[in-house]
Length: 342
Image (tube, rainbow, N blue to C red):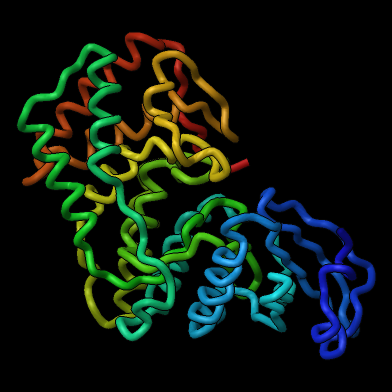
């Protein structure tokens, strides 16, 4: 399909007919073009047909409108929408390569994004979906297959973790996929794009991306510890500036939650209906910049470190350290995650 065919009569009458359209890289779930409309460079995005296409369109438009409250801007402006065709026309944002310490500005921008939603926005977007007891069972089954059965105490800690994550009532605007590539670095600051999976929930589950290794992303990285600390402090400072309150919650809980998610070992199109943790002993598949076993190894190390001396997850921390050792014993050639984004 061409960009001219994606736009309906109403948008063409109001904005003009697109010229010079060029297809841009996107997920299989959408078509994206850069084009000229009335002498203005724009981005045209259309959700591809599918059972959840209208939901994804609604999520993205709603999230962009909520995020547009930020000043300076954090997202492209919406110039027009056609819900029937699932098409949106967005401001074109000119970007450049990210700096070496990009995670610091990313952390601050992510906090500002999360702070754009308020309790009054409840119901505007779906709630973030936390891990479940089924995820716990899959994780413990993998550990047992690696020769490390869990104690009753570790199982209880994991049950308590899932309960806390499910009961969280925070209302931050979550991007849903805040990955390298969905952040545009501009002369006026960072802008986020691609909100098809946006939700409301606890912002810590996305702050955890920096430390746990960008779990929903093909472009997984593990920045050096000094940069991580600067980025996390930038998030806390920006949150305080935006909300007038100190950041609440437990980053260790958020990291441990991502460890349990076998779906966070594969891309979005392959996440439903398969226990991906159960595949680990038999196969190691590449997704983007790392393999599944590399991702698991990194996450185990992060949870072991962040839960050390933790009041509610200390047993899990020791268990993850031991499980990481079993992984390295079985697959000693596993390499650390890349420290820089491609």
